[in-house]
Length: 358
Ligand SMILES: [Zn+2]
Image (cartoon, rainbow, N blue to C red; front, side, top):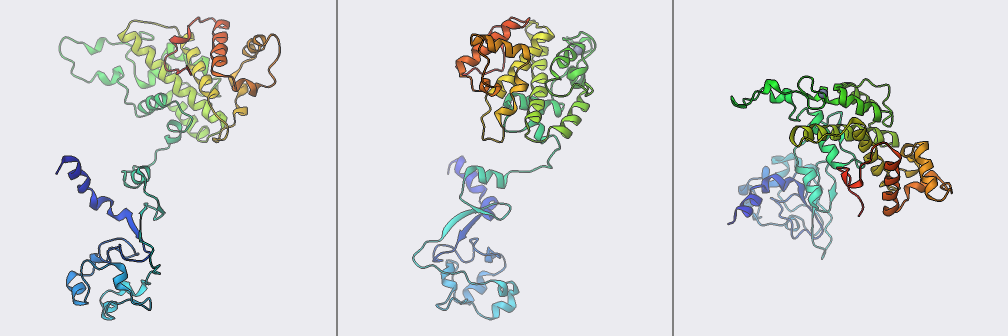
């Protein structure tokens, strides 16, 4: 037998409680071993000796237990031996219709079998954390969410955490300093956003996240998000996207400086954050709990709106919502105009983490 089959067979006892028979003609469900009634499997408390003593066999089906008057065939003495059987009503037999195998989830609801349903039923569950909706939500940028998850768990390889490692005599970890501001070791709380460089980025983007009055330390930001951004409103989503993108691109810049010696100033990083969030907002579709019309004022400053007006030869857009329905080609055009109108002159290809439509 192959390794794969052995693994699959070894979890039989694990998934058996979720596999149930819906009784129709009762000929396929094993009376003793299968799940088909509230006290299944009956084998747990009725011994093989009693089963055989009553004239049944271990192969008896559910239909073998029921007489022509829809009553139980088992001995009356069993009701004294196993009082739970008193509460068990015989299932309604539907002749010539086969029993049906179904998946019964943790809540006891019956559903068609699917891999996702099975995973939801058998996966190990921890206590739900209060930041779950800040990190994992339908409109998130997956790689940013994954990064934010690491930040919240304080699992990034920051210098304060690496300092306790034994890196060998050739490496002196005490000489490390934050590559963004060159002052002291970096850490989660330093990078987001106490570091003077990171603070410049944050100060440029926090208005878009509606967080201009929030202290720039990580705990305050998460506390604010936990309180204000736990739902799927437009503002909540923008706030979450901006915080996740800011931490992602600051961390990326930190690593670039450490490992590839390239540098970008804080304004460039802030613009990348804003463009990335705007581009994400443009991809939202109506009918998924989010209304595009809720976003235009978040997408465009007045200056940017003027840029768009000039594109159409002076014709103002019919509405701001119209800007959200730009074709992929026009979206690129729009982003290029934005870039030209701003101080940074990054070509489109240099926006990391932004997947362009073509
Ligand atoms: Zn720093």
